[in-house]
Structures are given as C-alpha cells and as structure tokens.
Length: 222
Image (tube, rainbow, N blue to C red; front, side, top):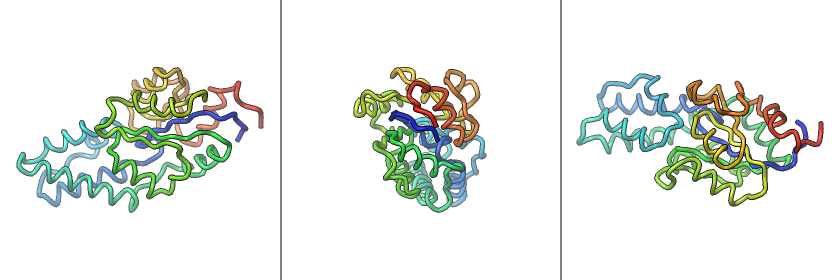
C-alpha cells in the first residue's frame, strides 16, 4: 500500500464493512416465526439497511399486532445482537485493510445509522475496537449522518476527509463537510444513490486505489 499522509476516514457499517443480511434478515424472520406472524421477505428487510433505525423499527412494529409490537421489536433487536458475533461476517479483506490503514497513520472512525447497542456489539464482536478513534451510532442522538460526521471532523481537524459508505447520506455528509466520498457499490444502496460519489468501488479491497485517485497530493509514493 502506498504511504499516505494521515487522512480522516469515516466508515459506514452496514453494506460497507459488514454483511448485514447475514444477521438482520434471520433475526427478523426467526423472531416473527416464533411469534406466529407472517415472515417478511428478504428484500423488504434489506431495503431498510443503512436507513435510520427509527424507520426500520416503525416498519417492524407495523407488521405486528399493536398490543405485541413493542415486545416483538425488542425481541428482534435482541436476536440481532446475538447474531452479530455468531453469524455476522465482515466483507472480504476488511479486517486486514483496516489494520493496514491504521498502521500507516490514518485516523479511522465509524458513523452508522444503527442503534447504539448494535454498533457497539459490531465493533466489539469483530475485534475492531483498537482500530477506530471514534465510533458514533445515530440511534436517537443525531438528526443526520452529516451531524455525526461533523462531530468526528471537529475532533480531528486539519485532516483530509473521506467518507466511505453505500447510501446517499454518506455521500451527502462527505460533501457537506468539504470532503470526498467513496461509494460502496457492493452494499445495499441503489445505484442512483451513489452517482454523486467521487469514486465507486465494487469490493472493499479497491479502497486503496480509490484513495490514491482521490488524494494524490498526499501520497509519497510506493
């Protein structure tokens, strides 16, 4: 990997670092089966990946008898947390590449639309805690990903900013803060959401090349 002066790299989780469908889809479907409810289709569940958690939980509740909605949403969330470490998987090459980026001096952070407990369990279960200087979960604390990313940027000022994610709000956050965006086309976002990114990657391993294209002035060579 080329040597690069430090940059602030803010990562999304779902569809960027983590294969969310291996966790959330079975969590929803198993919980609904346990309660004797119609089982939601895979694609419908996937459509909520990367969106604010409130939208996802509102949809879950709408599928349930009103008197059981809160119980079923909580049961689904607990099942999801259990599966994060049991069946959840990073995309190929994520751990190794994050380690290299960390070792070469980049400042790594996470800004996720997921709930606090989910984001914390993801980082813990996959042994990523030492690599990230800042981990923020939207939950009910932030009104947008831009607000989250601004908090990170303000804590580490003066570094070139790159936001890596698979949804439109990742790209919008990068541009709102004067940074550049890398779109993860292998994730869950629709094609039209990614068209504003400076670079589109089709596998996580393409990220070093994207950084070389975006920040050539900061590279010192091989």
